[in-house]
Length: 366
Length: 228
Image 1 (cartoon, rainbow over the protein chains, first blue to last red):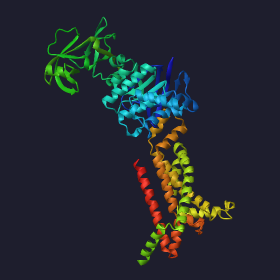
Image 2 (cartoon, rainbow over the protein chains, first blue to last red):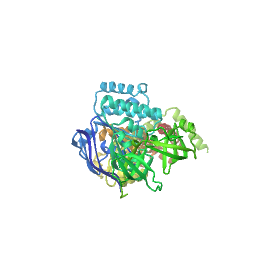
Image 3 (cartoon, rainbow over the protein chains, first blue to last red):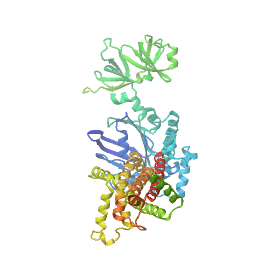
Image 4 (cartoon, helix red, strand yellow):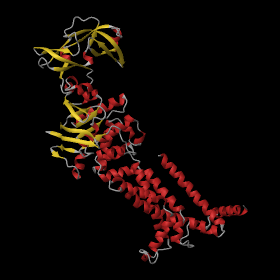
């Protein structure tokens, strides 16, 4: 049975509808990532689940019980959860008092508090910081205090709102480690909002894509990243090649997609069971395209001669725009760029497998 | 010019010799204003929190009225208290007119708007996310309010000190309801006013110096608090 269930949730801020008829169910011990761009309603959803806000319409069920809109029961249920905010708000108290406050509010005994706080500070690596004022901490330390403050309560549900949004890579890695440690060791149910897709992929059992207040798709990381349900999701998850076409042949589950507006009738081979004549999008992840100087010796079904139009460096990778009768974007390592001497005007072969192409139905109404 | 100079030297003599009359008056000032300030704080800090943490109709208007009363003339408060506690007044049965207790009451009324207003703005200065964080860590409404108040402690303390400063430096109310009775209700400001008009400058100047010195201390403390 699910621990948290959200049914028909709709919420507005003034005129603006931030959440629209949202349904979601999260199992005990599950780590669920909500991904979506800024302003999609992730924080609002977490705030409503965390009982910090009362939804405009719809119900929240916790452990099978419907949560009332007001009253003492909300506090009782809220005390079984804990919320990590995007910007850690450290109280103007010592680190120890910051971490202890949640336990004090629950009326824990003094010596139990001391034990638990010491243990948790050690776990987050802040054992020497007990007497430091919370306000003197760095961003990463503050977020660890916030994490400790929540974890010390041993919550059944941990809600995390962009827990690493403002942190440097080292602090981010530390926080991510802690989150995954807790998820494994304590079997804590987690709902985490993030706009960092790799974080969602790394930490979560299941991912939900929230776009403009609607939960567009939920599924495991592979589903979301490889098989997005529609163009919006595909765009958001970094599916950079979304090519409009029509299925012209279908054989043993292998379909040929003719690229729209292409007089030469270039066809992409893909795995799909859609019938001939279906209007579709062919989606190819840029990292699934390989570039080579010759187009032979490969089992891949799709190989096109192309001309490089632009090369952009993105850290260790390079984003290469090519034209092979239609526009494609490939992500290759910087070393490949140097070896192949990729630059605008260079002739290359772009190759990708039929299994690397995700065929998505094109909504004719759009 | 010599008059002023004489006054000043004699005043310093009075201060150095810890003249009993000067000390008595200064002590009474501190006691009355200190008591008024503490009692008003005990009322205004919880009341201000109540106003801050509750949403109700007319909240904005109420805060506007409170802020307007920051500058209520002291003599007006004096008049109000005088009418209230005069023998024929509604609280006349207390029989405390022209005694220190009624001066305390007057100063409390005088600084209540200031303390309320500054408590509310001190609490407003605490980020809403602090309250949210507390709530999400399982604090009840009261526990959240207490935490927010603790976060605002320096600003609230500054409000209290401002209240004390206004109380100890006012003259209108203390004069009207205290009556400036020697050995009973004379405080620094009333003595300065009365003795100066009698031409007795040295006592006035000595007390004026004490008042300025108090102001200096208050300022230093306030500055320290604002740096926190």
